[in-house]
Length: 280
Image 1 (tube, rainbow, N blue to C red):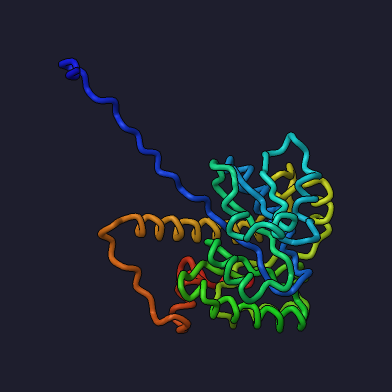
Image 2 (cartoon, rainbow, N blue to C red):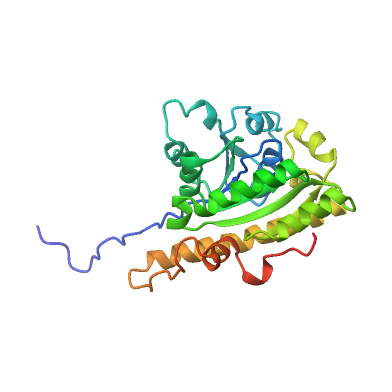
């Protein structure tokens, strides 16, 4: 039967799914504070109203334990104990089995991340933060780790945004001065320095982050402000790159030869003028 005159076909709605922004805390060296930064970032995004998933790949399960201690009155964070799923699942599968409404993914990794496991993590990540604590052992380990990141097949195929964070620092000490010099010598941005304080320990016991606290130390607010500003800038870069890739007639993404100095610097820094944080 012919359609009735005057009736129009129903409008077709196309909802474009925007994949979440995925950021990983990684360093081959253990004890550098990856979990502390990961949980605080997850709390921040949740407080912003972003549907946030926290994935814990560390067999110690510290991020999941933090989440279990979190009071139900605080903004909800979806937790994934990936360390208990890897026996039967790949990292990629674990990271893709998230709630459809997820907007931000924060990934806590185990120590010793390298080789194929590192390359797989880079392939499924948009932003990488590398925490470094002030010790000669940490500095040497981080040097090796960052080289492996920049030379990994996944990074060479699709450079992600990488930045370093000095963690658990005590300013005006010789060891911090050496760490600061080291971080400024890297081919990735030195974003900020987070002070050594028992505040993080006490907050962690109750599943809290800086954003959940009614009163905050001015120093912590300032230090985290630099980090969050950098992440906002990096997020804008990720979204811009995605929009370009969705355009069929877009100009191909121009890069230097993989592994070149200008290539790694361009991929690591959200903005060339903000690569250093001036001893933050």
